[in-house]
Image (cartoon, rainbow, N blue to C red; front, side, top):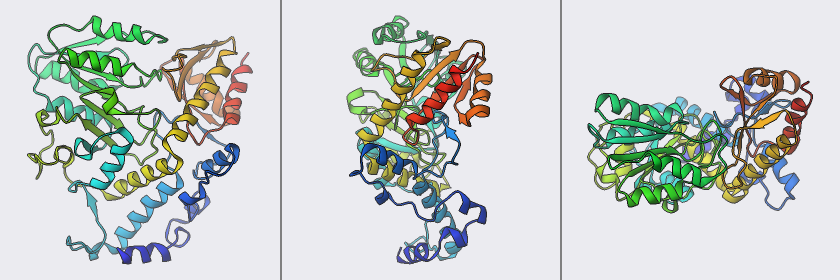
Length: 423
């Protein structure tokens, strides 16, 4: 470990990395540069400076992929470089760099993630993404012919695939509960789901936040009623962890999965799966390796699945540290503040129809809307051509606009100006 510290101290990105990277990545990004004693305006300027996003361009597509901070990016690159240089020193007895992931418990990292979602580390598995989490649970449950699985009609593909597969392969019954658009009444969503529940319903699998519309679902109430009826609940938290507060104990779900490379701004391939301690022993391992039958650490049993990228794990750990440095409440409040600012501005433009929720408890950093006279792809193109703004079109009519801590009200104002200038 001391040799690694010495290497990283002496090796700078300016001398060892590709020359073109110098134009985008500073040699040092320090968490200590984020000074909470600053006034709000200066503080958020400091935060923006932590991201090597190109100046003059604005990223509004965090719902697809969150950009890594410079601090996280440097940690990943440093680890990759160190392993490439010092790989021969690894003897698997504690000397040299750790070259791969996939075989180790990572108890400290899982504990840090557990503090974010309020879970013991033994109930958390590190996965590649939300789709992996859904599949681990879907294939791990003992479901058979006639068992009923409920989704909504607004699932992401990573939220419905395994359930449709189980309907075809095992003879399960697959049902979609229709969701309102826009959704501004939690009771309406609750009623729509339980309207399709029958005595044969075994699983309710729904998003915590709907990917297309950014609607924050009333999951506490849904999970409580499902548990009362003996129905297994699994939540797709791909858009939730890092965008809103996630407390799996308060929610009361049986399983929860997320992609931390979205709103927690971790490297691509960073996912988690939580399973309730009362349920985790009943979930079979989907990928069987050395520890497929481990009964002491079920989270590790589920995630122990062969060689992976150690540098990605280093980056995930750094992303958690970056999140904690800013502070959970400050981070989440900023996202909500910017989301509300965008929605308030859009509401003043007659040509705009907001498809997302405007209910204060059902919206956060994602806003989906349409503008009269333009398709979603046309509006996305116009945003880029006129102001170098990059939200994402969804479908033919809608534009999904994601805001995060690296964004500013001034960048949102630019988007509103583009829309107002559309004749």
